[in-house]
Structures are given as structure tokens and as C-alpha cells.
Length: 246
Image 1 (cartoon, one colour):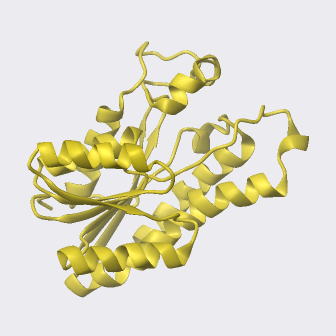
Image 2 (image 1 turned 135 degrees about the vertical axis):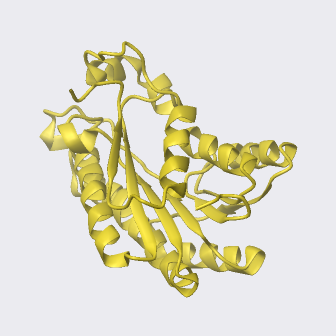
């Protein structure tokens, strides 16, 4: 799949990996929808950078945990660009809770993380699939985490949601074949605002990295573009962690 002129929705597109992906897609000539929930300032800054590149984009506020807002976002995309070709399911939240502090893992924590990280991703997939099926073509990339593989992370519920994303990716790849491909990126430590706000914990979680480095958002974005465009892969979870899980 060539990305030029493709219409691509990126959830959580105003910051970190989402922003890096939006800028790279715009540079490739894609038409980008930069979704955000609370990061309006950052999303608008991303839009400004895309405009400076000569790209085509708009921002859209929607909480992916609320299905009606997702449906409205996709409708706006269709009204503006006429179609939707790809989805990058990047929006995610976490809760910083020590792994051995079970008492702090309340129902509210479980519900909020699953509502955004898992159900929110599914809402987005469900909303775009009919439009992709109409054109018999589509590519979806979900963002997981090595926490979903190792069980270690900012909290037990976070790790559980990321594991669910990995499995849901495979299920969707089977369900939506042959015309829609669904893949997943599972990053290790990445230099984003999560890292900068929790450096001690992040270094502890990353452990001994054979490559002695952490990934940049641009590097993860490059992998996302590969999965979006490589037509021979579906149902795959790419681990990008500098050897963390070896």
C-alpha cells in the first residue's frame, strides 16, 4: 500500500508516538486525522507542523472510550476526505501503581484502563471497518507494549490491557481478512512524556538492555509506517525493545 493520498486516523495523535507517526505520514503525502482527547494544545501544534510540511490534516477531539464520539470522528473524516484507508490505534492511558500494591488496583482503575486501551481501540476498529470494506482495502495498526508480554509495567491493569491488545490484533486479523490487515507494534521503553515523568521507574522496568539504549518515538513511527504499507503481513506483533525481552 502506497501511503500518498491515503486517509489515516491516528488516535492520540498530538503527542509522543502518535505525533511522530502523524508527521511521518504527512511527509509521505497522506491525509491525516489527528485525534486527541485532552491534549488540544499539543494536537494543534502537531497540526501546525503538518501544515508547515505542506501536508493535509485536521484535528478532532474524541474520547475513544465513548463509542458515539468515535462514530462522529469517523463521520467527520468521511465528510472531509471521502474515505478512510488506515487506522493507527495509539490512544492509551495508564495508572502508576506498584505491582505488589493490589489494594490500590480498584474497579475504577480496571474499568478506566480497559475502556480506553482495549474497548476504545475496538470502537475505532468497528467504526472504520465498514468504510474499508466498501473499498476492499484497509490497514490497521494497534499499539501494544512489552508490558503485555512480560507482565511488568506501570501497573498490573496496564500490562493486562496491553496483552489483550496483542490477542485482539490476532483475532481481528482473522476476522477482517482478506481485505483488511491488522497488526501491532509492541514497544519497550520509548523517549516520550511517560518516560520523562517517570525516569527512575522506567529504567527499572526496562532492566538490562543489550543495545544499551531506548527507542525514540520516530523509530516506533517508522515501524508503524512499515506495517501500514507492507501488504504481506497481518496478525503480527512486532516487538521493538532494544533486546529488553531477550
